Image 1 (cartoon, one colour):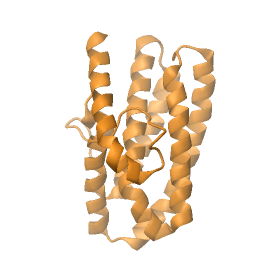
Image 2: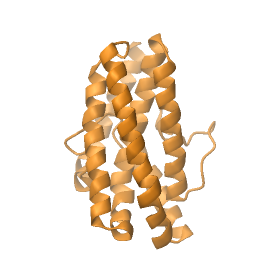
Image 3: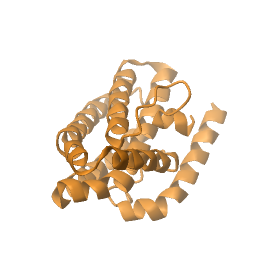
Length: 194
């Protein structure tokens, strides 16, 4: 799985305008579709769909924490930014637990439902509270600059959950690139082994 596959910026996809809000909304929609795919899939396809969902969530949340959250802190206030970071940290822990489970197990199914509900609630908070504040506080060109920075950060972001850095943008900037190298090597090894 390539980074372009994870972030949805490959040649075969329709890339949203670079506006950071549009990029994130498109990713939210892709995440929703991937949750449905994981729920409906069976066998090897289910594991592949979950791996794609896991990687997209990991890079998406890291990119938000590194690029969007500092801007949202200025636009929507520190309590809003901290609440979203706390949700992302919790989601990171839940994703790590899901990653350890057999995707064919009943426990995975039950936890996936709970996890999807938490991710959807988080996305709703962003879409109704954080994104309107970003649109009000930053002009189109500033949001496009943020969008380009977000996509660049996602290309370097870890593809597996790392609860120790989740919700902590400063740690994402310092530890994230090293974790990303390890994650992408792990992903490549797993793909070639199968």
